[in-house]
Length: 188
Image (tube, rainbow, N blue to C red; front, side, top):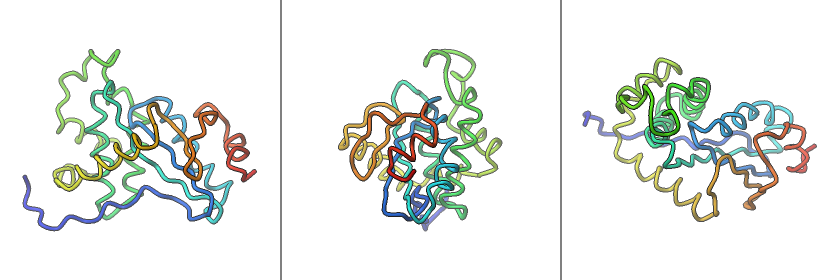
């Protein structure tokens, strides 16, 4: 363990400040989550930050074997000076380089030999965000547990899952266009 004594707060992964709230549960190595994530900037730009609050919830799934490490790294990035923007940069980098963070058929391939340190090094390489030191904060475990508990409490099983103003919208998906999302949000 490093000699860190003060743990910075974990910046909430929230963008916008409008009355309509969209919570999206993402698995950080899931191809469908990547597809949804890629539309967030356009969604916020078109909806307007004063009309929409977008909250990213991390939902690690056990068959994505490196997912817990990546999830913790995203939360670690949120404790850095870059806050939520650093976390967003890590998510973008992992989604853009998914093949470097997954196992073939969830059980084989060259990434079987990847260590936790190796994952963190790849994240730094692809995102430019150094998370190795922050990753060691034991306090991150509480946030990881909160994210998992929150998903379970809301009946979230798959990713991405979209929740609007506290209600899951199963008809909303990553394959939808931003126009469809805006309609479903009542912001078209």
